[in-house]
Length: 485
Figure 1 (tube, rainbow, N blue to C red):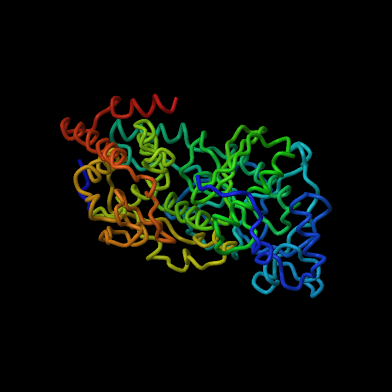
Figure 2: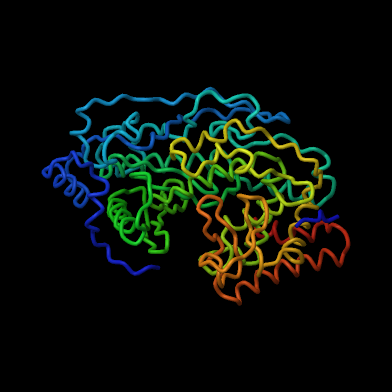
């Protein structure tokens, strides 16, 4: 039955080095002064600059009827649009890179004044577009235009009642295309308004909204990128988000903006039009990279998305899926499931970063990340376990097999790593490696009582299953269905 497997206190003062960092050296002192006034007071039309990240360009289209073959779907032909620059562009910069050389092929649209209402925008042509050349046949990841619908599962995956319930729940509560479109409309409007104070700014959707593991009620994560690269979250991020928060108070479609000074500061707010809650971070580009890594895992094997959605619901029901309260984040839970599926004797999924390192290079320009995995084919696994077997096997693995005090989960290498005495893992109760920057995604679990609660939930659920000796039917998912409703 079971597959065997092995808030930071900081004033909103202006950091002196911030403008030196994002203003090119060729800009005169007068221009720098004007740019400063534009940011701090929101007055005067901002000057056009070359942006480092290409603008999201996707005009929503009618939902296609996407059918998946065993080899996946064909990607649509997409080409990167390049715009040329003249030498005079240097003189017009006020926010951007230290010169146009790094990504000089891209230009930002002229910034306009803030729109106070979303309804004044005539169109939102801005879903993210893959910027590579035409995709080769066989890519398993659907384009963002094609939605997320999957074809029927093979009989072996839903051979029992529990598996069918998992699949039914997944279909009922997976994020729909219209849900994504609502979030994208807000993102597009926000980008336009933020560009009135940071003309080269780009706003990216990230997290569960795009990675394939979102539900209809999922919040949306946004990443504001002004210049690609590392920032000082204790100064630059708090300062930039403080300016954005002041702007949000002038926008009628935004309500309740709240700046959270955490290790990675975020600006929380609600879109009045759609009712969606948003979290906006500044330059946390690793979130964009892991979004498209997880999106590839979501579609590389059909069983991945249903099993992860149900496990997230299970964890939420038992109150162990809330990093703000010292338990597991959804991202950590997803990595835990992927690790389990990778390390079965017959793996259900591959190790994408080892098999396709060029597609997930952590140094890849951020604007190329969405198109990186576009040609990766679907994985054909010899493991034909049902969804129910995989769910129960996951519980058993973390209840009886995995050594919490000795192992570090690594999806990047598809194995457990030894827990060393380095700062990242020392005195940590749960260690889950972030696939790109190798930090601990489970660092929120810093209290022993919370760790014991998490471990007890896995152990108790596994005991019930082992005591029955068979897959349970209605009772097994009753808590999930009740929670989802």
